[in-house]
Image (tube, rainbow, N blue to C red):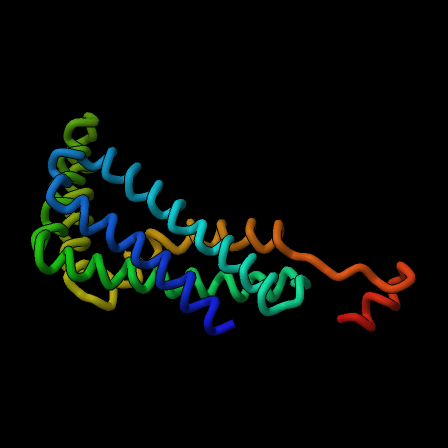
Amino acid sequence: MKKTVLTFGVISGIITAAEMLATVPFIHKLGGEWGAILGYTTMVLAGLMVFFGIRSYRESFSSGKLTFGRAFVVGILISLLSNCFYVATWEFVNHEFFPDFAEKYAAQMVEHAKASGATPDRIEKTTRDAEQFVRSYHNPAYRIPMTLLEVFPVYLLITLISAAILRKKLPSPGGTAEGIRQVA
């Protein structure tokens, strides 16, 4: 299992890291919405490595038999490894290229509240929330889990779907439930 997890986790991680690094020079031209679309599309494409990793494990190391639970474990380990690449790359990009990311994001929060016609009380609350966000985001103990939460749900969904699709039991001798237990 370790070889499969390492191989497919690293490939998936490299895909997400390469996309993030490749888009840094164009991020201001892409804008937030297109950047998010590109980012999540890449996550899904890189997440396909979870599917291929589970399938590879089933065919190469599991004799064609794979329970949902084992498929889920393989998939979630591939996902976690890939997600580590994502987080590490964001930490590098944030530090080197966007050290003022939190401040800019907070300013957008306040500007959005003003543009949406929020009441002065609501704008004041948004301003306080934005200031709290800036303080929190500069703490790696907050920033790293938040970055992980960007990508992990996508991979979790891909893992669940892949495990459901790829689970496979060997045919039972004689077709009885007893035969299934003997094979397993």
